[in-house]
Length: 261
Image (cartoon, rainbow, N blue to C red; front, side, top):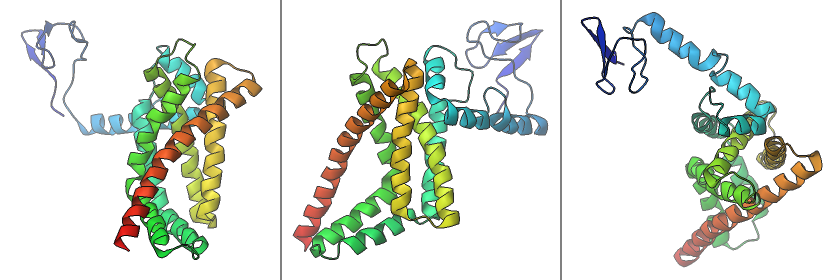
């Protein structure tokens, strides 16, 4: 990265907006006066991303496992000196998909589906195989496309409260960050202890429901029973919506294979 600021006669000219200033920050856009890039600067910035007490990815990971709802509440209400939650979600999805690939999750799931579908017509077996392949190739897109559905459910069942749709989307970002972080650990267990893909999938669903319950309980400061009811209701409604979309994909794949057959 090139220095954003250059010196001219005791003054600094901000290359970000062109404003002239003499302090450590631009008076117009707030850009910090930059110094020359050095090895120390690069190393410090890399370490800063992971270990900084407030904005480090490790500190974010630890806290989002324990308190996703509290973090979402603080973030929505202006406390944003943390690692960017949207970036963390993208990062965590990438880690989960990488571990799925390393653990041969989809291949194991496909083997299980093949074993339980031997009595199905050939076009249905081919359709299920195509669906598993579709999941493996587009899991990241599917994950991010599911977020608006879950956010809508959160808004729908809490529409009498003050949060708008975008804020409910952000609540789900923290919840999904927790889910993906824990799922990464579960997938590591799959790799180490050879847990079946079906067992891993079942564990992931239970963890997702538990995360929804905990997130909404913490965010709205609910009693445990209310948080449990709220989380299950939102997850079930969201999962049903996602299931309809996935069912449509399966139907299209089955229909395609039937005509080809």
